[in-house]
Length: 206
Image (cartoon, rainbow, N blue to C red):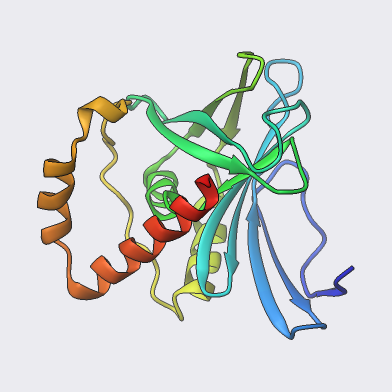
């Protein structure tokens, strides 16, 4: 088991928290923005973590209930304040049925949270077709999220996103021709980064 050294303040239960840890085995440093838990009397116990690992941003979601089998994709949607819900897919970790992650949509989700004022409402569709839901407050989230983003981008913080994200889409709404048009609008560096993420996604789906 990897040994981690933590240099962080005592965590507040009902607030967003920043944590920085060092794996002394490989001398790698990880930083994390951890969300408060939703109210247990109103919602399921869902928790978000924004992680900077190996200079890559990742968003993790943890539930107290089973989500999907290990290494499997599952659907979630998020709604920032009163904006329309947005859908994406996450993948459970190889050793967990209750925790999933996304790196392909991490920046989009982080930008949306930075643009939010009140809360992010999450819905998770489990392998039994049960729907888990939780509302996580965004008060105090911006400063903590920017710390992790800055750690991952060597001080270059992500700008707040358009506060009106696109509505929930299905795969049929986005075809290969549209992808090519969007791809050609990117810089060479962004194209390489996207192709790397697509390659990783395809490997994860095998």
